[in-house]
Length: 224
Image (spheres, rainbow, N blue to C red):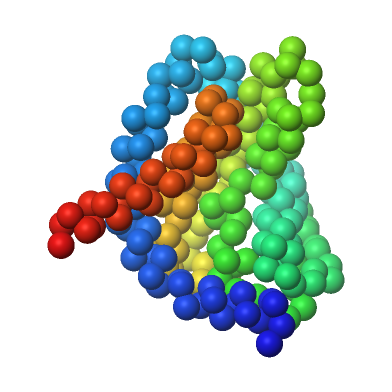
Protein backbone atom coordinates (compact mmCIF):
# COMPACT_ATOMS: atom_id res chain seq x y z
CA UNK A 1 0.00 0.00 0.00
CA UNK A 2 1.29 3.48 -0.88
CA UNK A 3 1.81 6.21 1.73
CA UNK A 4 -1.22 8.03 0.31
CA UNK A 5 -3.37 4.89 0.55
CA UNK A 6 -2.18 4.26 4.11
CA UNK A 7 -3.12 7.82 5.10
CA UNK A 8 -6.53 7.48 3.46
CA UNK A 9 -7.17 4.28 5.40
CA UNK A 10 -6.14 5.91 8.66
CA UNK A 11 -8.38 8.90 8.01
CA UNK A 12 -11.35 6.63 7.40
CA UNK A 13 -10.68 4.83 10.70
CA UNK A 14 -10.55 8.02 12.77
CA UNK A 15 -13.34 9.89 10.94
CA UNK A 16 -16.28 9.15 13.23
CA UNK A 17 -14.30 8.92 16.48
CA UNK A 18 -12.98 12.38 15.59
CA UNK A 19 -16.52 13.61 14.97
CA UNK A 20 -17.59 12.35 18.40
CA UNK A 21 -14.51 13.89 20.02
CA UNK A 22 -15.28 17.21 18.31
CA UNK A 23 -18.65 17.43 20.04
CA UNK A 24 -16.98 16.88 23.40
CA UNK A 25 -14.10 19.29 22.77
CA UNK A 26 -16.18 22.23 21.45
CA UNK A 27 -17.20 23.74 24.82
CA UNK A 28 -13.70 23.28 26.23
CA UNK A 29 -12.12 24.94 23.18
CA UNK A 30 -14.30 27.99 23.87
CA UNK A 31 -13.53 27.94 27.60
CA UNK A 32 -9.78 27.62 27.00
CA UNK A 33 -9.94 30.47 24.49
CA UNK A 34 -11.72 32.65 27.03
CA UNK A 35 -9.24 31.77 29.74
CA UNK A 36 -6.29 32.54 27.45
CA UNK A 37 -7.15 36.23 27.64
CA UNK A 38 -6.92 36.84 23.89
CA UNK A 39 -10.31 38.57 23.75
CA UNK A 40 -9.15 41.17 26.24
CA UNK A 41 -5.90 41.67 24.34
CA UNK A 42 -7.80 42.23 21.09
CA UNK A 43 -9.66 45.13 22.66
CA UNK A 44 -6.61 46.60 24.37
CA UNK A 45 -3.13 46.07 22.93
CA UNK A 46 -4.03 44.43 19.59
CA UNK A 47 -6.78 46.63 18.20
CA UNK A 48 -5.01 46.42 14.83
CA UNK A 49 -6.38 42.89 14.31
CA UNK A 50 -9.91 44.12 14.98
CA UNK A 51 -9.42 47.03 12.57
CA UNK A 52 -8.47 44.62 9.79
CA UNK A 53 -11.36 42.29 10.62
CA UNK A 54 -14.05 44.97 10.82
CA UNK A 55 -12.65 46.78 7.78
CA UNK A 56 -12.85 43.76 5.52
CA UNK A 57 -16.21 42.69 6.94
CA UNK A 58 -17.74 46.07 6.12
CA UNK A 59 -16.31 45.92 2.60
CA UNK A 60 -17.86 42.49 2.19
CA UNK A 61 -21.26 43.58 3.48
CA UNK A 62 -21.51 46.69 1.31
CA UNK A 63 -19.47 45.76 -1.78
CA UNK A 64 -18.08 42.23 -2.20
CA UNK A 65 -21.24 40.35 -1.25
CA UNK A 66 -23.17 42.25 -3.93
CA UNK A 67 -20.76 41.51 -6.78
CA UNK A 68 -19.74 38.35 -8.56
CA UNK A 69 -16.26 39.68 -9.42
CA UNK A 70 -14.79 38.42 -6.21
CA UNK A 71 -15.92 34.86 -6.81
CA UNK A 72 -12.92 33.96 -8.98
CA UNK A 73 -10.45 34.68 -6.19
CA UNK A 74 -12.46 32.87 -3.52
CA UNK A 75 -12.93 29.91 -5.86
CA UNK A 76 -9.21 29.79 -6.59
CA UNK A 77 -8.37 29.96 -2.87
CA UNK A 78 -10.92 27.21 -2.19
CA UNK A 79 -9.39 24.89 -4.80
CA UNK A 80 -5.87 25.77 -3.63
CA UNK A 81 -6.81 24.54 -0.16
CA UNK A 82 -7.94 21.24 -1.65
CA UNK A 83 -4.56 21.05 -3.40
CA UNK A 84 -2.65 21.86 -0.21
CA UNK A 85 -4.29 19.02 1.70
CA UNK A 86 -3.82 16.70 -1.25
CA UNK A 87 -0.08 17.37 -1.04
CA UNK A 88 -0.15 16.94 2.74
CA UNK A 89 -1.70 13.48 2.28
CA UNK A 90 0.91 12.57 -0.37
CA UNK A 91 -1.27 12.86 -3.44
CA UNK A 92 -0.34 14.32 -6.81
CA UNK A 93 -2.18 17.42 -7.98
CA UNK A 94 -2.33 17.47 -11.77
CA UNK A 95 -4.31 20.64 -12.31
CA UNK A 96 -6.39 23.39 -10.76
CA UNK A 97 -9.16 25.36 -12.41
CA UNK A 98 -11.20 28.32 -11.18
CA UNK A 99 -13.87 30.30 -13.02
CA UNK A 100 -15.69 33.57 -12.41
CA UNK A 101 -19.16 32.10 -11.95
CA UNK A 102 -19.06 28.34 -12.61
CA UNK A 103 -17.04 27.10 -9.64
CA UNK A 104 -13.73 25.33 -9.86
CA UNK A 105 -12.03 21.97 -9.66
CA UNK A 106 -8.79 20.52 -8.34
CA UNK A 107 -7.54 17.48 -10.24
CA UNK A 108 -5.97 14.92 -7.90
CA UNK A 109 -4.49 11.55 -8.75
CA UNK A 110 -5.11 8.62 -6.43
CA UNK A 111 -8.55 9.59 -5.19
CA UNK A 112 -9.58 12.01 -2.46
CA UNK A 113 -10.23 11.60 1.25
CA UNK A 114 -12.60 13.40 3.60
CA UNK A 115 -9.85 15.71 4.85
CA UNK A 116 -9.21 17.02 1.33
CA UNK A 117 -12.93 17.55 0.75
CA UNK A 118 -13.59 19.40 4.00
CA UNK A 119 -10.33 21.37 4.32
CA UNK A 120 -11.58 24.66 2.77
CA UNK A 121 -14.34 24.86 5.36
CA UNK A 122 -12.02 25.07 8.36
CA UNK A 123 -8.48 25.82 7.18
CA UNK A 124 -7.77 29.50 6.39
CA UNK A 125 -5.06 29.09 3.74
CA UNK A 126 -4.48 32.82 3.27
CA UNK A 127 -3.60 33.09 6.95
CA UNK A 128 -0.28 31.48 6.06
CA UNK A 129 0.75 34.80 4.47
CA UNK A 130 0.66 36.98 7.63
CA UNK A 131 2.12 34.08 9.62
CA UNK A 132 5.13 33.87 7.31
CA UNK A 133 5.50 37.65 7.18
CA UNK A 134 5.47 37.85 10.97
CA UNK A 135 8.62 35.73 10.98
CA UNK A 136 10.57 37.31 8.13
CA UNK A 137 9.77 41.05 8.19
CA UNK A 138 11.04 43.72 10.54
CA UNK A 139 9.16 44.26 13.80
CA UNK A 140 8.22 47.82 12.79
CA UNK A 141 5.81 46.43 10.19
CA UNK A 142 4.03 44.16 12.64
CA UNK A 143 1.00 46.42 12.95
CA UNK A 144 0.38 46.12 9.21
CA UNK A 145 0.69 42.34 9.44
CA UNK A 146 -1.86 42.28 12.25
CA UNK A 147 -4.30 44.33 10.15
CA UNK A 148 -3.76 41.81 7.36
CA UNK A 149 -4.43 38.95 9.80
CA UNK A 150 -7.76 40.47 10.83
CA UNK A 151 -8.76 41.03 7.20
CA UNK A 152 -7.81 37.47 6.26
CA UNK A 153 -9.85 36.08 9.15
CA UNK A 154 -12.88 38.08 8.05
CA UNK A 155 -12.36 36.95 4.45
CA UNK A 156 -12.29 33.29 5.42
CA UNK A 157 -15.33 33.56 7.68
CA UNK A 158 -17.41 35.31 5.00
CA UNK A 159 -16.24 33.08 2.15
CA UNK A 160 -16.89 29.94 4.20
CA UNK A 161 -20.34 31.26 5.04
CA UNK A 162 -21.11 31.71 1.32
CA UNK A 163 -19.64 28.34 0.32
CA UNK A 164 -21.39 26.27 3.00
CA UNK A 165 -24.70 25.06 1.63
CA UNK A 166 -26.48 21.81 0.78
CA UNK A 167 -25.47 21.97 -2.88
CA UNK A 168 -21.75 21.77 -2.14
CA UNK A 169 -20.38 18.51 -3.52
CA UNK A 170 -17.50 18.68 -1.02
CA UNK A 171 -19.91 18.46 1.89
CA UNK A 172 -21.98 15.83 0.12
CA UNK A 173 -18.87 13.68 -0.27
CA UNK A 174 -17.80 14.23 3.32
CA UNK A 175 -21.29 13.81 4.72
CA UNK A 176 -23.39 16.60 6.22
CA UNK A 177 -23.61 14.92 9.62
CA UNK A 178 -19.85 14.63 9.90
CA UNK A 179 -19.40 18.23 8.73
CA UNK A 180 -21.91 19.47 11.32
CA UNK A 181 -20.10 17.61 14.10
CA UNK A 182 -16.53 18.39 13.07
CA UNK A 183 -16.47 21.89 11.56
CA UNK A 184 -17.58 24.05 14.54
CA UNK A 185 -14.79 22.69 16.75
CA UNK A 186 -12.23 22.74 13.95
CA UNK A 187 -12.97 26.39 13.19
CA UNK A 188 -12.88 27.51 16.82
CA UNK A 189 -9.57 25.75 17.40
CA UNK A 190 -7.84 26.91 14.21
CA UNK A 191 -8.83 30.55 14.71
CA UNK A 192 -8.10 30.35 18.42
CA UNK A 193 -4.69 28.87 17.67
CA UNK A 194 -3.95 31.64 15.15
CA UNK A 195 -4.94 34.45 17.51
CA UNK A 196 -2.91 33.04 20.39
CA UNK A 197 0.03 32.52 18.02
CA UNK A 198 0.05 36.20 17.09
CA UNK A 199 -0.72 37.53 20.55
CA UNK A 200 1.26 35.21 22.82
CA UNK A 201 3.61 33.20 20.62
CA UNK A 202 3.80 29.68 19.17
CA UNK A 203 4.36 27.92 22.49
CA UNK A 204 1.14 29.28 23.94
CA UNK A 205 -0.72 28.46 20.73
CA UNK A 206 0.39 24.83 20.88
CA UNK A 207 -0.46 24.74 24.59
CA UNK A 208 -3.98 25.92 23.76
CA UNK A 209 -4.57 22.98 21.41
CA UNK A 210 -3.25 20.45 23.90
CA UNK A 211 -5.26 22.02 26.71
CA UNK A 212 -8.49 21.66 24.72
CA UNK A 213 -7.90 17.94 24.26
CA UNK A 214 -6.54 17.24 27.74
CA UNK A 215 -9.29 19.18 29.53
CA UNK A 216 -11.96 17.35 27.54
CA UNK A 217 -10.29 14.01 28.29
CA UNK A 218 -10.02 14.77 32.01
CA UNK A 219 -13.71 15.70 32.09
CA UNK A 220 -14.66 12.50 30.28
CA UNK A 221 -12.60 10.33 32.63
CA UNK A 222 -14.05 12.10 35.66
CA UNK A 223 -17.60 11.76 34.32
CA UNK A 224 -17.32 7.98 34.01
